[in-house]
Length: 138
Image (tube, rainbow, N blue to C red; front, side, top):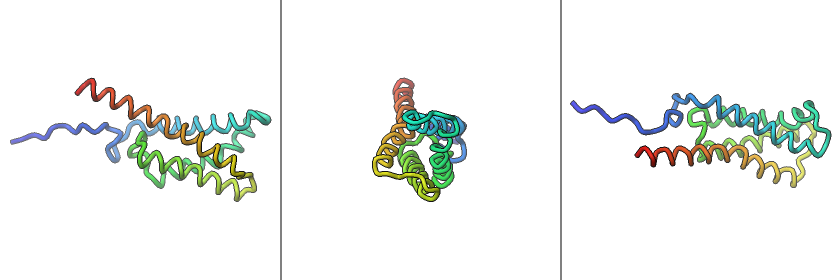
């Protein structure tokens, strides 16, 4: 009888088997807080102001994690990471409009750029490290 070879897919790329999703979610939240802190540094950098800036994007992040089931492959760049990034920005901007906060074009563009680096960058790095590890072990 033939026994199938073990799967070579990383554990956190298999549906329902991710053990690294809390790490990915924590990194995402921390980087959105950093984004808000950097944005507020030109103004008064107080914790309440940082949270005021961050909350719409944190809510958008949670929507993205839920809708796109990012937990299944938390370090995926495509399509999960890109969908998460765009959902985070779009939902964040919609929430800002609903509460009367600004959504100037320059702010939207900066947000798209910074959150692309912050939400996709760590995922790209994880994929690069995994690729290097698999080449070394393979």
